[in-house]
Image (cartoon, rainbow, N blue to C red; front, side):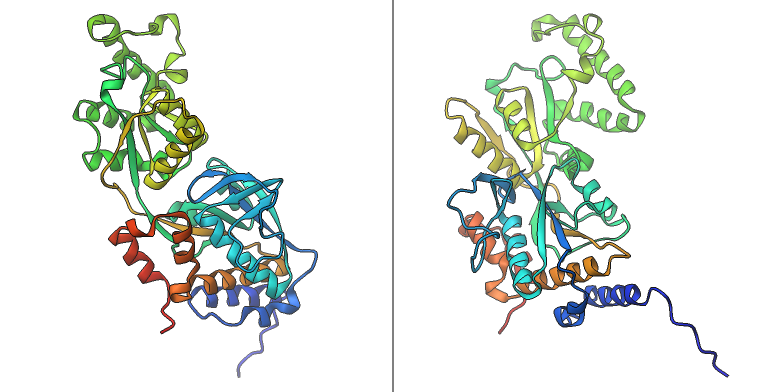
Length: 385
């Protein structure tokens, strides 16, 4: 005889989890109807906004006289928070999904500014529910409990800008400044240098030094500094080819403060400023962000001369997604997140009217789209025909 099993106490929670799994599997059921009774007017989704990753997510100006999510608008292209207007390709995608969800569910939103360094920590801890940021989909980012991601929304790649050699003191590192600059806690920081090395993008004279640096990263800062001090000694021993500023013996902390072969920065704006001041030879990062940040920086500082060349190819395939955190034990928040995910899917899978296509035309030159990106959009959006 079959035994009757007791009903689990967390039945509502398990039902939501099953619904979530089905939704991820592609069963786009009418979530609003199934979860409407679980919505709590006191629950607001917490949205993380990136401010320094143009053209994907950035602050474009003050909120005065600009339509945004907080005002009545049919298809908002920006989000207003704390007196600033956040714009960009990813912001526009988030704004469209949030506007659609708001109209159906009435759920409210709160916003939080995040950085490259703290964005994943904020998401993993549940401090934010949705991350509106050009975040590359990686296994390590998806390994956090309760974190998932949307379908890919953009295809980018690691590239670099390089200061013009005739404007630099040559040789550069280890005698003057930093060889490579990148933003901390990005994929460029994790393996971007190795990708560029593997693709023969770095000048041959620097390949061995960068390979050595990568090999020493697991050994820690002390080992890197000791090796860098040995390299710097070459500048002291051969003053005819360089003009060292100070010897390591006079400043024992120089390698950790001023003369690293690779220097990490908090923001792209900080890195662009250092690059244009010729403190950094290579600026490595997702190529669209590198190009737009340098353009914005020189536009805001017309008196600064910043001659550089840009890599003619990319060295990786970076697929961006909208990362989300589902909070177990909070049925109302889970229901709101399911509604957001459905709204996002509805905005993406609209064929030629997809928010991916609309946002791309808004923030990029559609005439210069690469074949790889064109095929990417074709593979992601649905064709209503």
